[in-house]
Structure formats: structure tokens, C-alpha cells
Length: 396
Image (cartoon, rainbow, N blue to C red):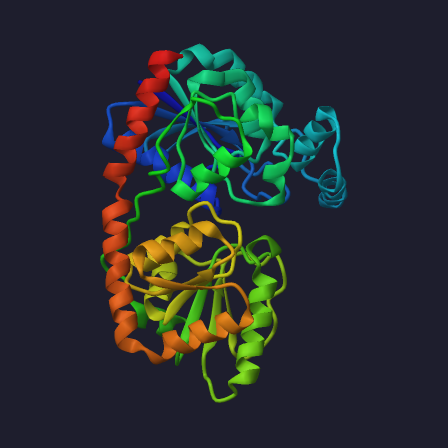
């Protein structure tokens, strides 16, 4: 078959969970099946501005043809934030909600026109993430020939009436987790639309030569540290992490525990000797940082899967996550490879346990490896998606 993945950003320079997920999935479908895979996306790298930074209209990335379309208008953050507050505050017309979608972006009418004109040139389209302009307006053109990977979580936007019709349009859903499927089925009338029962996600691969000591030497880090990897912003609940960490250190002045953060700094990281700003790091340094840490911390309340949590488990590191996120809590319960908290005192108790129970942490590490190996291999993920795509192509 000829398959087209549709995603808001795509490229080696792009940092973002859904975008990395889309790129990895497209490449593995291309490598592990006989399908011809292409990608339709924008020329943006940054999801905050949607500034056009890629110059070529077409390029080949790891054997996949990528079609790029210009973003018509960069995001005006001040205008968008004001409009978002208005949308969250009450009922509005569909026209007002669609104006919010355009303001959010990436507004790419050329991409939507291309989808309209090329619908018959592909057997199946795979749309990644429910939230953006490319999916909302693109699904209107593709309809039942599309598989939607929603990456949905219980954030305020998922409650907007804007999405009620959209979730009836695709030919199938490919959910990351059973928790995501349950959430979508709770909020949307998906009817008898085909899905994968929530057994999806990504294949998790880590290098064989991960070196925690090399990371410590490169960044001059001694002693125990927990590591956060991802966008450092309010949507990931980083301000609460800073608050909780400072409270922990105030209550445990004898502790030499540090917090290391790797990723783009959207909100300011506090200046403190026990907080290490790594900046945007390479894949090698990312994996090495996890291996060098005592555990990985993820404070986000809104995750549909979390690749980095699974990568930490694959590297035998325990994880500490926000229990207010059903998906992250479920990872811990299903794997017995991590702990979760819902308030400061639980955060404190979890850290104390992880620092003082070395033998149990080693067992958690082995549990994590087993959990990932049993549930998150690319062969299994691609096989399940292939069944869904073939069914959609047959019925469309």
C-alpha cells in the first residue's frame, strides 16, 4: 500500500513527543513492511511560533519522502492565549472554535488543499495527534481513509465541542494505551469505528553502549540526581516540580540530591546549585543521563504514553511520575517499575524510598525491562497498525 503520515512537525531537528512518535512510527512502517511511506507536514520546527524554518518543499529523510507546506501565519502567543481563555470560559459557536484552531496553528491551508487533491493517490492516511490544525481540517478531507492516533489526555482542550464531530470522521483509531481509549470513548461518540483496543504505543529502543559515567564526566556531576527530560514548561507541570524539589531540599538539608533537566527552557529554571540545566541534549547524552541518574522524574499531568518513561524503564531506571495522570499511574501499576505521587508529601515519601531502598530499586529496574520488552517492541506495534491500515484501505 501507499501510506501517508500527516503530522504538524517532522524532522531530525524537531523535539516533541507526538512528533518524535510520528517519525519513529513512519520509519518503522517503512522498514518493516512492504508499504511505500510518505509524510505530509509543515515547514515549522518550533511549536510555539510555527515559524517557517525548513526551506525545501520536498526532501528525503531516512528513506521517506517528506512533503512540506508553509505555515500561513505564525502564532501570536498573546492573542492566542487571550482567545484560549475565552474558549475555556464558556460555550461558543463552531466558527469561534475554528478561529481558535487557526490561531493555535499551524495554519497551513496549502497542506489541506494538497490532502484534498491527493486523497485518491494513497491507500491510507495516518494522522498524528488530535489537537492541531493539520489534523482537524485534514480529517475533513480524508475521512474514512484515515487512521487517527489521537494521543489524547484529559486536558481542557479535549472538552471543546470543536472535536465532537472530528472524532466521528476517521476510519479507525490507533490508541497508545487502554487509558486513552477509555478517555476518548467517555467523551466522544465514536460508535463502531475500528480501533486497536488500546494496545498501541511505540517500540522502545535504546543504544547498547549507554554510558552513565561518560555523562557524569562530561557535565561534571557528582552524587545522586534525578533527571527530567522534555520541554521545560508549564504544560509539563515543571513549576510544581521546582516547588516540590525546593521544599524537599529545605526539609532535608543533609541531602545532596540534585535535579537535572534536559530540554528546551520555556519557563525559567530556578538558579540554584542543586538544579542542573543541561539544555537541549543529544540522543546519546539523553540516554547516558538516564543511566547515570537514580531515577527519572516526570511531573506532567497530561500524557498519552510518555516515551521517555518507557526508555527509562528499558534502561532499568525506576521512574517517579505524577499520579494525577492516569496513563503514568497505570505504567507504574502494570510494571511495578515506578512510583507515583499526587501531592507534596507523597512526592517526598517516594523520593525517600527510592534513595534508601537500593535492592528494591534494582528489582524495579528489572521489572521495567520486562514490561517494555513484553509490550513495546516495534515489530508488535507495526504489526497491529498494519492490520488497522489494511482494514481502513479495504473499506474506504
